[in-house]
Image (cartoon, rainbow, N blue to C red):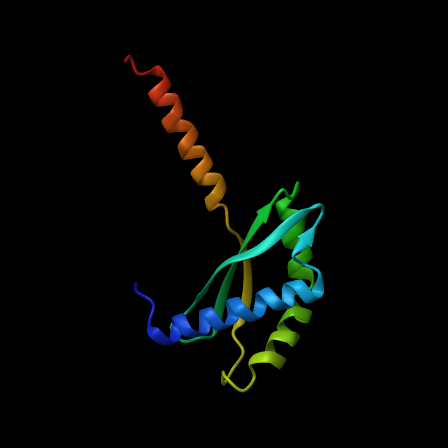
Length: 120
């Protein structure tokens, strides 16, 4: 289903504000690696927001996600402070691991293996 204009606007706003909050709280650098917000998806009713986090050189992504989830109340409090005049209600934040980079690497490796075995 396609996202509506308002969904895109709210998702962009949340993405921008959350990036700043992650930097202020020190959540963008974790366990010797980097954490960034790759995308934000919001439901049509604007009550649920899915935040996809990309982990770079983080050894245990599940533990890093748990650290972010443990501080979600603090993230939500700061986010509410920032956007309270732009939204009627604060969406419920749910954090997910964005594994698209790993998926791309896996597919590229498969293509290389296929081409390597192919006679020239």
